Length: 185
Image 1 (cartoon, rainbow, N blue to C red):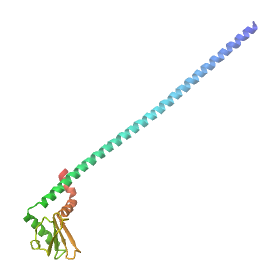
Image 2 (image 1 turned 180 degrees about the horizontal axis):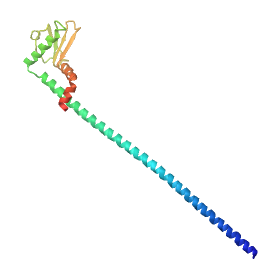
Image 3 (image 1 turned 30 degrees about the horizontal axis):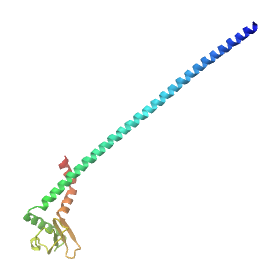
Image 4 (image 1 turned 45 degrees about the horizontal axis):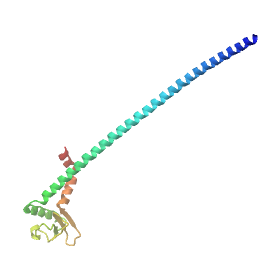
């Protein structure tokens, strides 16, 4: 019986030790789970923050890209309108009545004579003005001249380009800002 009692005592002690170890393990597992859950929550929060920042950055980039594309489209349309206005103004100049065109050409010759005393005039094949009409030494026709005049010295070393396109382009370039303000407010 004494052996039975010792065996029961050892068994009770072992069961108490096992229960204590299980209780300690359960507490340790619970602590590890809480610590792991806290770390997971922290990592999830950091990841959510990164995702939100990345989304915000992407949204900003998309907005910026859309705004830039919009500005490009508006600028392209403005350039198209300016180009049409330029071509329209040039067409008006090129299609003035002959008397008005002769007046323009004489003014061009007078201006060029400050540089070339006795110029020769090179004009469009569509113009029919004589040297005496223009007040120049001679007249030549050239398909490369669409309207207006090229005025050259007799030896060709000095040339003044008075083609309507060139004159209009110079005025246009000089006043582009003002023209844009007029057209687009």
